[in-house]
Image 1 (cartoon, rainbow, N blue to C red):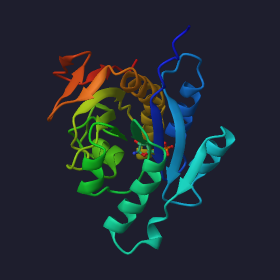
Image 2 (cartoon, rainbow, N blue to C red):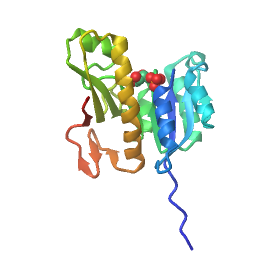
Image 3 (cartoon, helix red, strand yellow):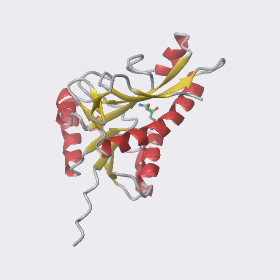
Image 4 (cartoon, protein in one colour):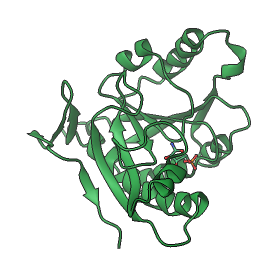
Length: 220
Ligand code: GRF
């Protein structure tokens, strides 16, 4: 008798807006050999285009509208309930624009990923593209990291570089950074689903070895 195939890791994706990273992940997950399954997409904004993208791909959606909750704790608890209903192995923040509470982050430790549009540890927080321009940086980029209690401070798994060109604006830069995110995020999610990447105390294990510096995709 043939053994049942191992169940695929279950992925829940959270987004707040356009969802272009979500789209890249949906497309990757539709490849025959993709080692995970996107079981639900959650949004904090009922009008987010990300919800339409998920519906188009026949993926279940849920909305936890942050404006309906008095406190961050209440919102996070409601969000956690929705997420747990899907019994996820991995929770992927893809342009999810809410700061999560310590309790939430702890509950999903090692299973929670985020994409941040800078070469961390540079430029945590907002307006990263303008800040890179103002600083006169030659290289900017994006980072995929584990989420921990420290905002945009969890161990970084991989980064993609973007060269800053003369005449770049925050908008032109954002466009090129996003194009890199669409390449990089599916690769990293694949690694997680394959069990190649794990979170240690404050470090990343890659194929069982300490990852001394994040994997870096150069711009070319
Ligand atoms: C991405 O650039 C990501 O780095 C940032 O928010 C943006 C989301 O874009 N956190 P989208 O919704 O995936 O199109």
